Length: 266
Ligand code: PEP
Figure 1 (cartoon, rainbow, N blue to C red):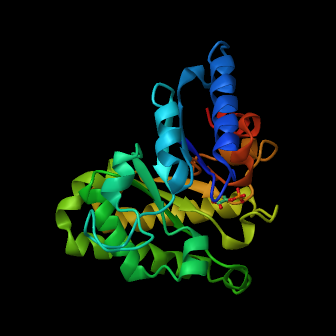
Figure 2 (figure 1 turned 45 degrees about the vertical axis):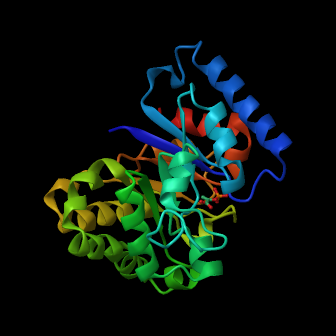
C-alpha cells in the first residue's frame, strides 16, 4: 500500500521569508535524497505539506514541479465558493491556490473553534464537490483515553462519513481515493507522549473495519498515525502494517526530520 507522510505546518513559520527557507531546505533535501538508492527515490511514500492559508498559493507554486503535494489545513463551512463569509476560504479557493487536499477536523479546530459533527459533514461535502481530497483527523483526549473510551470516541467521529454518504451517496466513488483518516490522540499532539505501536495498530484496525462497514468499496482505507512522530520513533510506527503513514506537526518544520520520517515509511 502507498504510504503517506504529511506535514501540518499549522500557524508556522511566522514570515514569508521563513516559509521560503523551509521550502528551500525541503527541495534541497529531496534533491539530495533522490540521488541515492536508499531513499525516497523508490517512491513508495507520498509527501504532502499543509502550509497556513496565507502561504498556500506561494508554497504550492514553489512545489509545483516537486514530488510534494500541497494541502490546506481547513476550509470554510459554507457551500458557496464566494460570498460574505469573513475569514473563510472556500474549497474552490484553496483548490485555486494549488491545494489538492485539505485537512479537516484537526483536534485544534475541534478544541478552539468548536468544530462540530454537522460542520464537518458540510465541509466534507464542499471538499468532495471540488475533488479535493480530505485528511480527516480523529482521536481521543487524555481523559477519554484514561477512561478507555478511545474506540467509542472514534466511532462517533467516524460517523461523519456515514452521514455524508447518507446525504450524498454519489460520493462513494470518490472516497477510496480522496479520503485518508489520521488517528491523532489529542494527548499525543505536541507533547512528546506517544501511545504504544500496539495500541495504535489495534486502533487503526478498528478504524479500517468501521469504515469498511460503511461501504464495501472502503475496505482498504489509508489510516495515518499523528502525535509526536519524529525521526527517532518513525521506524517503529512504520514497521506496523496497520500504520499507513504519519501526520506530522512539529517535526515537519525541519526538512531533515520530515524526510527522515518519510524515509522510514518508504
Ligand atoms: C498534529 O498536530 O497534527 C501533530 C501530529 O503534531 P505533532 O507532530 O507536533 O505532535
